[in-house]
Length: 567
Image (cartoon, rainbow, N blue to C red; front, side):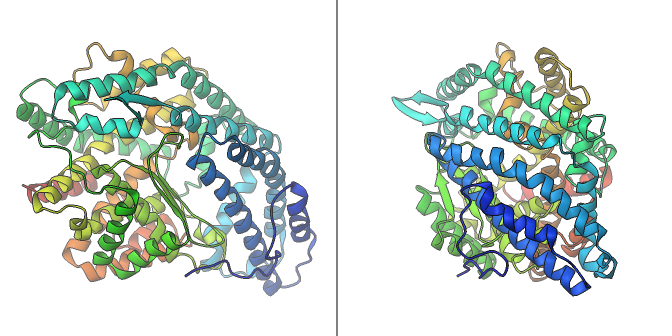
């Protein structure tokens, strides 16, 4: 069992009730004298301890708020932090960064150990602006409204009030009229909030653009590439990714849709894309959150005992909230806890195969947190998404070995596996669409809501197959982007899923060839945290950080071969 380590810098009992609680520790770091390399490294450890404590305090406020969006006290506790505490921390973080960079002993630090960390610190100094502090607080306040708006949505089907996640299960129903009814009801309630979500997004765009201009950038896209620390690739690489998806992936998606149309025997409508083409009932791989948890532990144990231990430890420490319910924010996440090193998994399980994918995905993130827990500084554990998502997406695939715990027959397992693998291919064009959408949005910050809608429709056709008939529902298709919470809450955090998905396929390919070696490489890569470049971490995992046409072509051929085995 992992517990909080006794602190060396902060008191063991400390509670953030006001800025005055934290201020003395930041001031102590700022005012301390550093007379040697050893004292500098001790100063870094003290700073890391403070950063970890602050990070975990914010984490718990966010977790509790998303678990119950109807509780105004929890919402206020979170907003208090982002409006009263974070704005105080931001300028002091900049001063601490400058103190570090100006320290004469910085050149004596081990370059191999601190290179990644120090280049990030220098980039933070470069883009920090005092005038952005209140804007960041306002952005945090506004972006959290998305979860409240979507979390409040519910529909009534068969006399029962359901969350949108629960209602979406009806899109798998063999009865086409049931699917259509669910689709219409879900989108009826979404349509009622279209204007509200448009207005919120307009406000976020304006605020984000101002942050970028203040920091000396032409647009928020360029600012975010710096803020996200994208040292290892450029916007041009993203455009190459978009093109490669169109060239190598869209033809496969079109083939899937042609097969679906032929097997169903009619033209495809939006509510026909989730149903089993052989009219089989949707698989129910688990019943309750407790059942999902128990089966996940057994599944992970078949892959690696350590993976199962991680999930069991989280359960023992109440770090799981799995079931969907009204008032709970949408989506799912694994929130790392910087101080205790035991993360929190949040999701909206509704007894679907997609929930199994989500659970093992977030479980992969959790394993990543455990494997990197012993790194010396909190900053060493703060991985970029291209690495974090490699951990989770690889787990989705290598955990196939234990997923018979969820599927009692080989037929059900093969069916779930086929759906998952096809889903991996189908999601890549969506990822490219969302990313290209964001490049346009923030390169054209004065666009109108109507222009944004029209550009989204254009992209939907560009990355679509033309096989789905939206006639009569164009108004719904024009706003499908509003389902993507990343656009509201974590802008530009999405193409990483595509890059990491390619890496995960390569990890799985290695796993099939040599499980022992692939697992050792996977665990070694995750244990690095963020102490190496993305390319070096991928190399440690036995794969490439590569999203060119030849590489994607090779991986798509591999997936096609694996899909053939599901028949």
